[in-house]
Image (cartoon, rainbow over all chains, first blue to last red; front, side, top):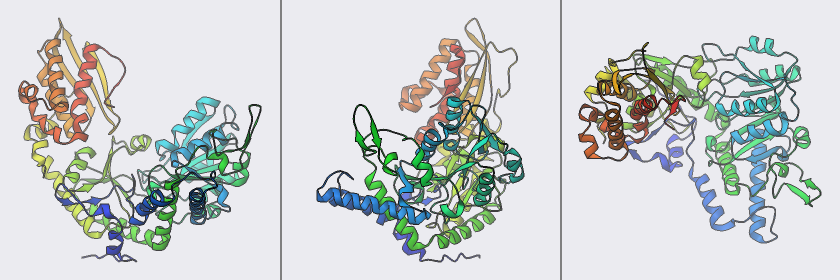
Length: 411
Length: 148
């Protein structure tokens, strides 16, 4: 029997996640839907509780002690984000609701005022809807054109085709770091370099990357990088948009309101410097602080070790799932995150999902908000098991065992 | 624990494996498209209506076992019915799954094999997709029916 060698104390880690220790339909929960959202460690849950029990106040406003405490913790969280993605300055890290809001902000505040009718925004065939629809809106508003870089049958970007698509009209590239539907890890650094050599600005959708891979925005050389807290063990409703300071400085605000101004009269308003310029209204303070706690947790485990162990899980699960009769994998890139998209011949993904759920196993079935990917592979839907560092070999074994029974129900 | 056999009853498995009336219809007098955005299931329903009677019904589409079996069973059950009777079936089917209405369930005969779907709230839309599409075909609505 093959054994996995987690580079950390897996049992201790699982104890950090209270939600994992429950039964669903009288079976121990096996949570394999981490690409949809990840579970939260106690330290993150306690950070929220502590904030609301002791420090709740508004930030950057009051001169009283609670407001000072809230402001300090909120800004400390920004510093943790800066360190986590190696941004040059903490002012380059804007708190947003999530990846989606980060992308929309860049679309409206950076691309929309600059792009001309007939110019081109590039995306790829593997994008999540949240990295397609904001660009379609921009195209409708400006007369710009949206083009998708094709992917091959393994689910990898066709780099040579991409190079040919870089005509002078191309002004912007929006691309995912890791595909949520296929698991592909894109050679993002190489792609950014090619784009930048052609004078194309680049946004990276990092929703599926942070928390699983080391991300260094300066090393990558991207102009913008957006990610969500809830996919990296922090709460929903908080995320980050990284942007190069020189670009953020020249951009108009995305939303107007309190916090983002220095002076308001009815004649004229002066905007606050970044990051406040893009943080209109009272922010998600507890969310930001909890994101900071999640970053602390990840750094303690070490991202490299997380990546190494998740790779072990992926390798083992891929090997085992390939032994299941009728299995069809969708997404077989050489470089993959621990996401396995699959179908069973003759069985719809929804039926697979129901049967697994009946045994306490949570996976996602459907189009994963990536309908163009489904179309590319000629499927209506897939079942998707997405793993995280708290998952175990035993869980994979149980998952495979149940998967093998699906056939019995339908044949 | 939920017994999967309550959901995937023999009749349902059979209709999923060998769906009845699963074909396009050239001489349809009405047709409608159904779409479940949650899972991407699509279904086209064809009706041949003469003198307010459903002379023929068929469907084409790609869906899960529940939605395929439901469409198959539905076409079987509405053929020969008046439009008023077909609408009443839709109402009873809807009430069985969404209102847990036992009287409605009893009036459905063979269609009541789908009552087990109630225990799986996420799957109710799979079972009702074909019926909403039938309703649209009868009403001759041309936009795609969505379960959302």
